[in-house]
Length: 201
Picture 1: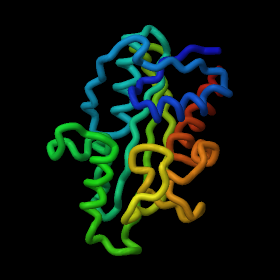
Picture 2 (picture 1 turned 45 degrees about the vertical axis):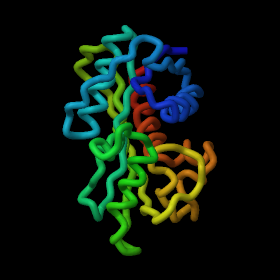
Picture 3 (picture 1 turned 135 degrees about the vertical axis):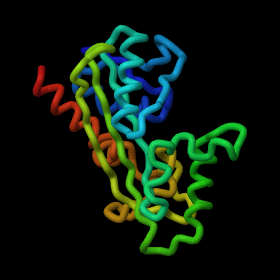
Picture 4 (picture 1 turned 90 degrees about the vertical axis):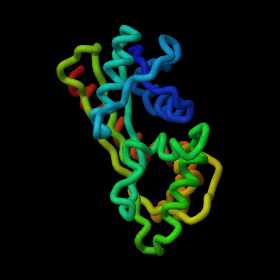
C-alpha cells in the first residue's frame, strides 16, 4: 500500500475519495494527521487551487499528496459559484455551512425558469510526489445536471440535494454510494488521475 496524504478537511470528501482509492493500493491518510492549517487558495482556477493544496500537504507531511478543488458551476449564473462553491455564502452568515451555501444558490436561482437551470459539478485532482514536484499529475471530471427548486434526498454533501440527474431520475443526494462513486465528477477526476499514475508506475 502506498501512503498518500489527502489534502482535505471535508469529512464527506475524505470518505468518498478513500473508498475510491483503496482498491488501487493507496493508504489514504487525512491531512489532519499531520497539520491543521489550510493552504491559501489563491488560484483563479480549480486546477491552480488543487496544485496549491497538494504542494502544501506534501510539504507539511513529507508524503506524496492528492488534492482536489471542486465546485458547482451554474450556466444561468455565468458559472457561479465556481471556485467559491465551498464559501459561497461567506459574508452573509456567521458560519459558512453546506446548508447556507445551498440556500444562497436556491435564492439566486429563484427566478430562473425550468429548462434554463443547467449546472455541472467540476473537479480538478492533482497528485504531487513531493512539494517541489515539477510535473504534477492532473485528472479532470465534469458531471452534468440541473438545479432543483427544493432539496431531495439526504445522502452526499454540498449541493447534492439540489443537483438533479436526468439519467438516474434522482438528485445526487438520492444516489447510493456505489452509484455516485462510479459517475461523479470526483470519481471521473480520480479515475483520470489513477490511469496516469499506473502508466508511470
